[in-house]
Image 1 (tube, rainbow, N blue to C red):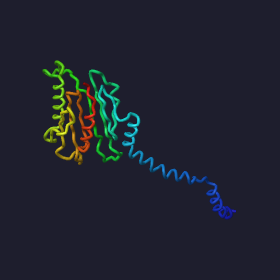
Image 2 (image 1 turned 135 degrees about the vertical axis):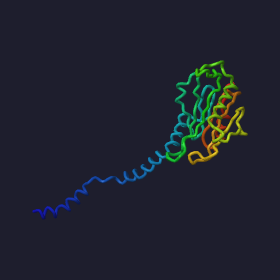
Image 3 (image 1 turned 180 degrees about the vertical axis):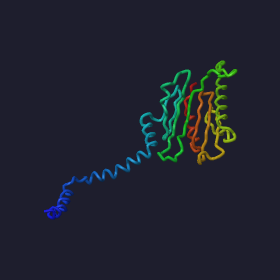
Image 4 (image 1 turned 45 degrees about the vertical axis):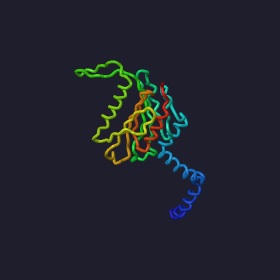
Amino acid sequence: MQTAMQAQSPALSELDRTMAPKFPRAGRIFLLICIPVVLAAIYYAPVLMSFGWHLMHGQAVEYRGLRVTVPWGWTADLSLMKEDFPANPQGITLEKPPKTLNIEARGPELIYVNLLLPGPIPETHNGASTTTAAATLDQQAAQWEQLFRDSHPAANFHLSVPVNSPGSAKCIEATPLNAVDGLTGGAALACVSEKDGWLASYAGLQRNVPLFFHVLSELKSRG
């Protein structure tokens, strides 16, 4: 009896295999196509998000009378505009994320634009902070330049004045003397236009400095 059952078991196993549901061939082909597409979409998520941002918002954003161009591949952070008060402008930040999620890719490149507004000059006396009369535009521009110089010391950066600064802007550029995190070709800039009433900064690759100047050249004058 046991021998007969053992003899029937291969036949039963073959019957089970034939009765088991088969995955459709079209479904297998669909998976073979979709899996690489999904993986590629995840890997290139930053650039796809930038493309989606432009579909929703277009090529520029308005900020307090300034029309700020947002280049392809860049996005604008609009979250701070919800807390933007007339006496305390937060500015607007453009960001160029890396093209992929490669963990070895450098961080995002940044462009910051804000209004140049007269405001109180902070002073410190005996450890106590006070304010004096409102700062003039040229005083605020000087403070902006000094802040940039303080954050880019000559021991680590080469400071220069770009010869092709756009329009009425006065700019100062800092390039690292040595590679930062093994990467070269970086640059940082600070620009001020007292005539048009704005200030801006850039941190990113040297090759995108002309793009930064293009954004500044298209800023709408407040005057």
